[in-house]
Image 1 (cartoon, rainbow, N blue to C red):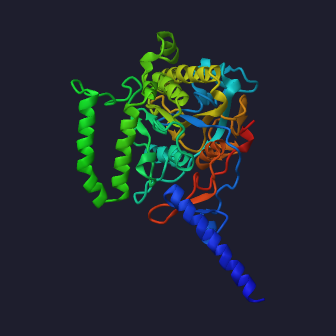
Image 2 (image 1 turned 180 degrees about the vertical axis):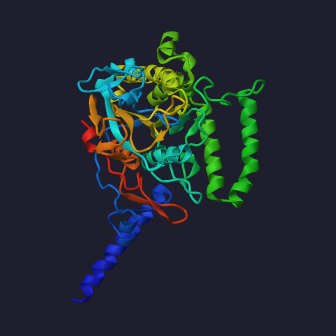
Image 3 (image 1 turned 120 degrees about the vertical axis):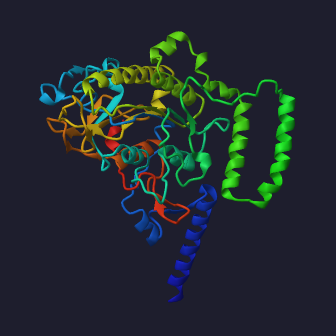
Length: 435
């Protein structure tokens, strides 16, 4: 009858409304599949529908702030004048060469998938950094979530006593949770050495006195929270509760790298980055799901061939020790290690013996978490100036991270301003990188 299609359509809309209501309840923002309503299809057009069972439970993200030179690290061009004094060396993987400044990682190359064909649309530091972390270009009107926030949004924490995400390093430009609720922001630590500040009772305050103070504070807060039952107020209360839970947790010891032997600490390198990598391993073991360690000053406009060897030495020692430890402890298999930077450096060597910004071609590296090691993806030309095979855009790299974690890449979430977003915008995961 003519009524039947109409009834079926009404039933379909009811199911969709119910699904949307559930998504809103569980995720805290409006959500629709990129495959349902026409408006959602338009919003998520181009987002990857590829899904898989997660191969990684957690991510350790090593971010080289300032633009790491690909030619002087992972994409050397032996015999070319663009190399200056930098030489290439063989590695533990057939067909992969790295620069002489990375001898320890050369021995780990059988674990590495080196992407030579990265390309970004952003050639300035702040914009490039933001794009790499979020897949979206920097806007004054909105702040987008970083990948750690997307992971926690969809999958939550593994250890309820610890933060789900931790950022180690003095990088104030991190986008954090973006338009998601603030509890999905990373815990920011300036360095591994300082541990977790203000996590113990003040001198002269015992447990009993502290409990009394908490009870008084709670009574004072109750009326305010009831009167102003708003998202930001609830977020502050949640943050307070999480902090108290962490203070009382035996897992707080995960933040104390002094518990590691001197030999282990020395193996990672007694520097901010090396000790950050060591802390990242401790946090990964304890259930933290997304740990970023930043390492800055790769902006080598001047004295590239003096500065890069020193920077690479620290990277080489910290990252290689991290990979060795993760493998030894059985964690590398389900921990995705990412080495990223906002762009590369020019093949041209400037008048100051430096290299300038070069977003057209650069390298990133993946290891563990289901990645097949000992491979190169993509190719740059003989000068390292442009991508000539299998370009990987920045959103593609983030889609690959999301794919490893089993995130729904095509699920559209709406910001409070009702604008639609997906995990990695229109990025497509590089599935050939996986075992």
